[in-house]
Length: 430
Picture: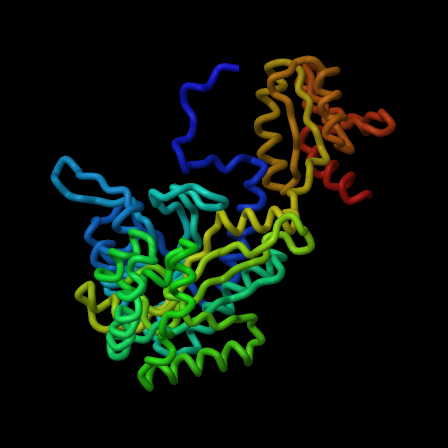
């Protein structure tokens, strides 16, 4: 077969009908958990000013340096396809004066993000994310609640063997002292790290700790730990967070080198993982499903008043991959009724009947493109329906319809306006 001229661009993918049931399940659970915890939905544009991410996400982050899709408008504005949600939602919070609302303000959203990166399992250049943000509360209880929500979503999706990695990366008071110690350590190792990290030592040394290159991972394992440099406020906040997690029996692991790759984080950072395929020796290891943390300084960086904030992003593509491995979605019930129509007049008459069945919440299958009764009955038989409604020319003239029991072949004729009630009785077994 010749290669098709047009296919999805590299790193982009179609979500086919067989995956839509999984996607609906994920979104239903995520939105239900968020609503329970008092979150409201917000939607922001896919396009924003590129400076929004340069200033907030950070010029020296991989997202801005390597992954952001940008375009210049005819008017000369430099815009970017959103690579993450947090800067958009902070911008919206400030633009619409949400700081005047009762605090904390709890918001969630979902949709596509765009990052130019090497495609791999569950990671695409157009990815889908579920995002949660809280503004106006500096308590470690909020950080713990976000982690609890993330874990609750995964558990409700029947995912098992979940682990949360947590750390504190301090704030503007104590992090400079840690950076100084880290730079001192890394300078002696600069020729043992990758080319990117050699540059990061000068521009953003914490990013070296986030590098996935094996040789950089070895270097980081001996690096100074942020927890030893925390000021008293950050230390108390982190201690409080761990106590909340302990009290809630949430499965966490302390990772002293976890930093996440964004400049705006302060204090708490966390990542959530699920085992790839529990019980399957061929698929070992854990799959990263998302993460988040606190970012108390971002609002002020954008020109707003200082406002504590925290949030997380959950990779829907990754979660979908994990759910498909571990469980099956609840499939919608297959139709119990088939409506066969013979001739144009019958097809026209059936349009109103379909709507009546929809209002009655009764699923009805059909085959509008076929005129042969035999072909339509064969289709009904294949679908496994219990009854077929037959609407032909005679029935149109008599304003009636035939109800055929598929198992026995028995038939009865009823008035057309009584069809829905008759079907209800049949479904109830009366």
